[in-house]
Length: 629
Image 1 (cartoon, rainbow, N blue to C red):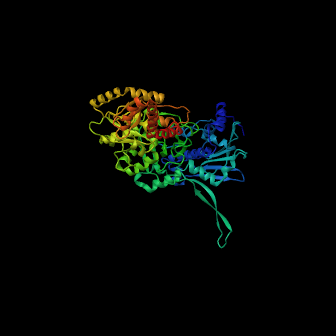
Image 2: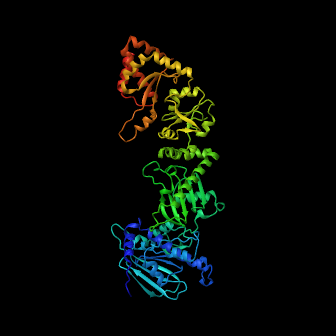
Image 3: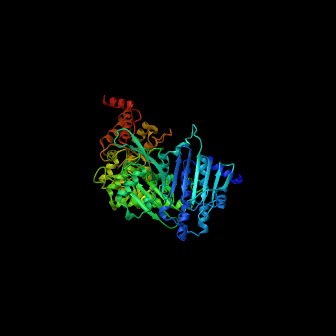
């Protein structure tokens, strides 16, 4: 029997296949089962026009036969088999695809579902086997052949005895090492788990003879074994069924079983897309965030199937970061899959699917917001911060997509912990209102207590309460909504004053210039300016900021682990109608030292009002005591 050599290119490919291309050795079983399914597909296709095939659809199957004693795993199919020429062509030339050639020769359209169209998956067997034997008999042939190889050294082809049409692949497994347990692929539980993971939706039954123990009748602790042939796969993907065949309970059960969650999903999205790319999708929005969701350890992604065979556990490219909480799967016949079936070419089809998935999720969340506000708010409490990060990331490139999904606490809500959308806020705005006002703080109570919030509310205008660190950064990216700019109540001109009010305030500031110069000198570079403000009603003092960096943004940025500190352009604002202001004016001439102390005290008080740390609590305590003496 002549030893034949792989072509030089094929040798290099085989070496690469064994050592580099596949990430996990367990992939070999998926590849060989997929090839077996292809072989059955071909004979089934032939049976539709050739009555001599003599086998019905229900009789097709794939068998797994582990043999621990012989240390072999055999994969058997009753598909179309191979001739000697096809063995030479399909197994002697790596990367030749018999399935692809079959499609071309029979002029099958793109909707004909044949899995193995790249022709290299078979060689993944050498990752776990020291010798691979293929026994096959082609449909219509009386002669059977055996192909055998131990890897890159070459292969042999000879005749053999085989009564039935189809193919047997016998893997003689490598010996176990300290690092690798090849014997695990002979264990029934392991094979069952791998079929369930990768090949559960192969449309022909995958069977294995399994051993079960049960208590012997009439005894208390004696067991006897019996064997039975078990079908390992469910065959029909739920996502390929019609929606009217399925109930909410069916969707929930699939989610709980498939994604190992303890809570039922909030919503499911089941769809089929046809056009530039065809795929089925089954997506879920969880009720609660996984324990590691907001950590760097969380791995996003959808399960990716090609014609019912799972090729990726988590395909991150199918989900944008702002929808990374979604779980589910995509099954497509159109994807361009490279030689490992694990890595995808980043081609047009994949990008089209990702864009379509994003649109589907957005539409479903919009529908939930409109039709079931209570359930949407439940979703928001779990994942809302992710949508806000989505608005902020990428310099606001996704703001149009996400802004109508955002919720905020607001003074306009009936309940303190209630939410409003931006659209709802705008519908409640006064006709003469120029801005969408917001206050930022660590809680709704803190936002409500800010002096400037009090003024805006008293003017009959609603204030959004931003209580998450990312909130103000997200609004900065949105910039405006419905042609209304966002305005922090603690920053700049609030647009609430008439020209007469502004002129009057400017005059008062001019009159008190000497006072403010003295106070600013006492405070040094802690503040950019000291001035009177019309934003104060009952409070004597507050801090505001000039420029793009607000006080709340300063707080957030200074908690980052970068070691760098930033400071907003702080302005100390005083209330001209408060008795404290009259005291300050008097001290300017009677006691300049006390004025300096009062300036520092008011500044520290303003920090506390804004929820910012005082610079020296001990010094502040001493200052208060000194003033009390």
